[in-house]
Length: 172
Image 1 (cartoon, helix red, strand yellow):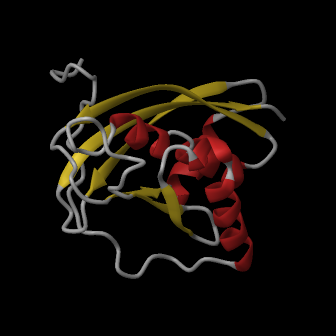
Image 2 (spheres, one colour):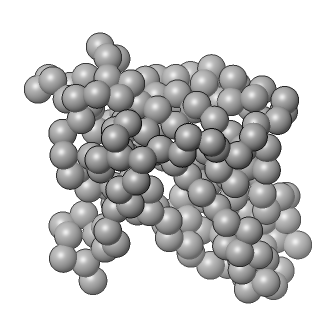
């Protein structure tokens, strides 16, 4: 069990943002536009900045503005969580395909440092991770997978960390 009250039991990943992310395709650029126009996501104030052509990398941005600022002048926690909530589920659904059901199961969000500037999160799903899921599950079997994502400023300083648990089931 974690010492943290939120349950985030791994150290957040402090690193600067990728200067050269994997290339987008025409299709993922259209998906990015659609994602940003979706009312549920648009309401968070966040924006998807980049989706790699193979869906294994996504970068989101939570700007610091009137839509995302809370009463004490920092980035609103609801905007932070809303920005990261659907990303891993969407990535796994796109990569694994229709033979799998993927649902968010739980999340633990830890606020580390108040955000007073734009925050970014980078989501990576290595090939080895999705192949491990495919290899481990027979039709009708399920597993829970845990992923940690950090929200950082442009310098890579961590402001929040979220551990997501996703339910994955092989249907066929």
